[in-house]
Image 1 (cartoon, one colour):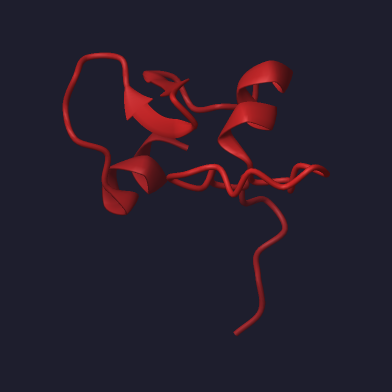
Image 2 (image 1 turned 90 degrees about the vertical axis):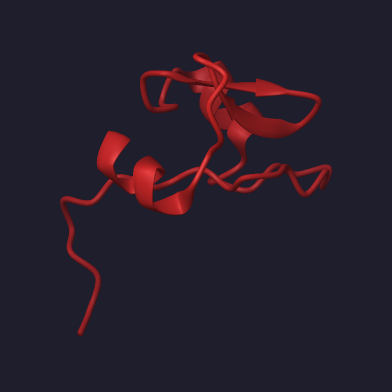
Length: 63
């Protein structure tokens, strides 16, 4: 039951605001361009560009 190597990292739903940003930080992923299509960050929260609610299940399908 290990992690598969081909999996992408999913962003967190909210930034933890630490000085050294974690690898799953939505702000860092937005800057690097690794955020899934259809998602953006507003006020340190992960949001969808079409205005629908963000869920972990839909986020996994998008990644």
